[in-house]
Length: 302
Image (cartoon, one colour):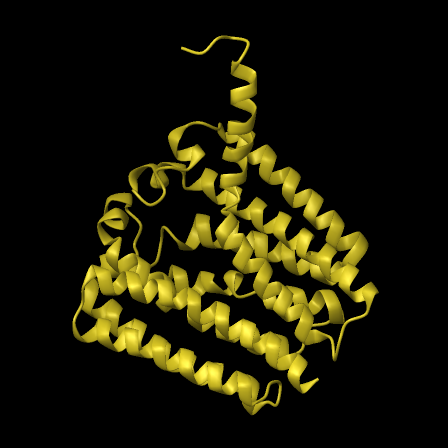
């Protein structure tokens, strides 16, 4: 048993780590990365120092609001998280942080992030980011997720918003190019999450959430994953077709889309948990490298 004098030093860092864990750092990092791509693509050529400063503030504001939404999600799904191996470690699920603590933390992050976006970026970005918070934390988490197996499809709109937020931050408007980036992430989201749900199906069954593998079975879910990757393949070609990107992006997009579709086809024909894990992991590589190729290509053709 540790002494009373050493307890505060041990408790404080642990508490901060718990609050940090509530923000789902890996997910938020991907959100900010996609928003950053939207910012870069919205600026022709090399950005000015003023634009770099605005972009940095926008990334900070979006990170704070996204972290707030993640923390709020942990409160709403506290009981569900406790039943699932993948999420049972979360501080709210383990009872290490109380609901009032978590809600206060979420509110502070959301208010601070919104203020930064409103004052130093622009009101449009703030309102779009706040709407994304409501879409994910309330409409998806509270309403859609426990009611329909199409929760990922409908709720995917919130997850697809980051590049739109980034574009709005730099351009002050939402253009067809920004909506095209939205479409890519929107179509990517269902096969990404359904691959995870396939090998975590028992967790979802215990939680009571109507995920597609639970309500419609593995075979139907695998077919849906394959169909979505085919539609996603076509969507990934649109930046090239619309002359938003060049040949470098096209080569990378085709290679990544063939890979994702290949995993989906193999999963459809011969299921295994190991293959579902590989498909889920490749989906993360697919989106990250796809947007990285957009970034690199943008400067090559600028």
